[in-house]
Image: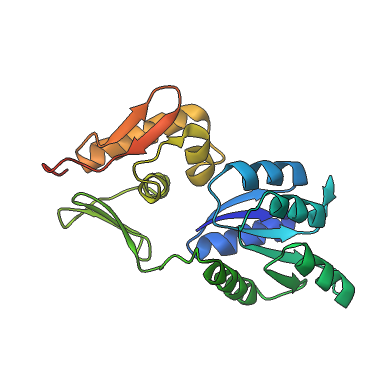
Amino acid sequence: MNICLVEDDLLLGRALQAALEDAGHQVVWVRMASNARDWLRNESIDAAVLDLGLPDGDGIELLRSLRSQQSSLPVLVITAREALDQRLLGLDAGADDYLVKPFATEELLARLRAVVRRGGNWLDTDAKLQSGALVLDEQRVTVTKDGQAVQLSPTEFALLRELLRHKNRVRTRRQLEAAAMPDSDSQSLDVHISNLRRKTQRDFIRTVRGVGYVIEEPTTQGL
């Protein structure tokens, strides 16, 4: 899943990002309400993990704003506000669940799976992504073409997964960089895409000039 993590604490944010990524998710971590608002409204996000105490605003207001836009995005609130009235406030504002700090990472992952299932956006972790003879197995972190293993770097795998998850839809450079290489410069994206094309032995990743890239269903000739 594509997760937006909204947490201003550096140590906790890093720990949660690592835990979510270890569980197989793609994570965009932001520390400000303003940045979170942009991601939640404009990007392809499957669920959000939202802290309430943010430097530039309250997570409750961010949540209310999100719901006012008729968004059904699953949101798991994490906060140190443990009083009953605070929990009720969060749930009434539109949170799907409310987890009080400190908490076990395993509980957060379980609650996140639950809110996504209830929201109807549950993704089968055993599902495979495919385009023609190319198959990406998210659970086993493998890629095969015509049954033969294709060796990809972690970044190449993440880029291919993002493109296959949104097959036939153009992914912008910003979306691809955020999903697979948030700490790299823009020119690196083109290098990784070139490597992907070479390793899969087909130019099936189409460049949309000035926008980004897309994987389209191959013709009957296959890959």
